Length: 221
Picture 1 (cartoon, rainbow, N blue to C red):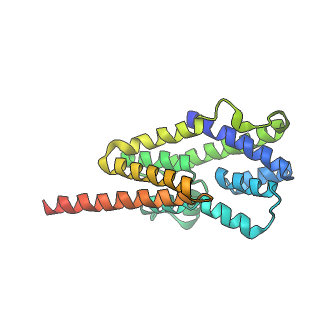
Picture 2: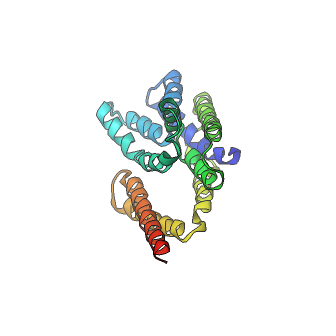
Picture 3: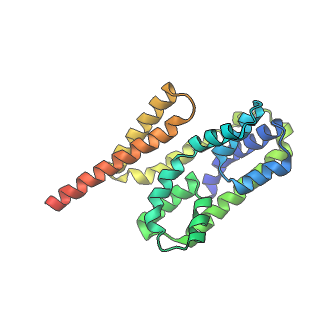
């Protein structure tokens, strides 16, 4: 988990720096990191504010589109959460980010879902994101472009590592290829961040169709 956490560093710094440029106070930036805990949505929000847009509706729609993938992530975890109370399910939802979801799903396939494991992962990433936000606020004036730092490759490399365990089956590989193609095409021809949701839906649909096909073929044999 600790090496994977390096991926949040440039984005946490960028969020804090852009947020300060948009006129948000240090307290407001830290409060957003503590209550929202969604790096992409927070970055989109402060970027929009930095451009002078203050309409709440615009902020809500923009951040909702970016985080539509969480619907698919939640649906994937849902079968493992039925035995937990509503407060625990709400806590699980709060700590659900790309990294905690991927690590948890990888473990689910080996040893089942563990609330303690998930909570530990979520808390570590939460503390890391909150800390990086604070560091970005403190040293923001010293870094003009945090995305120009030599660690910009960490985030894509991190997600590539997280995806590898899912490529052990033909279904996983097919879903990954379809999702990748859909994401690239969507990013090239669609405005905004619709390609994220489209790629997620295309990948999930591919996996569902193939799993259903293999299960029916197995039953028939």
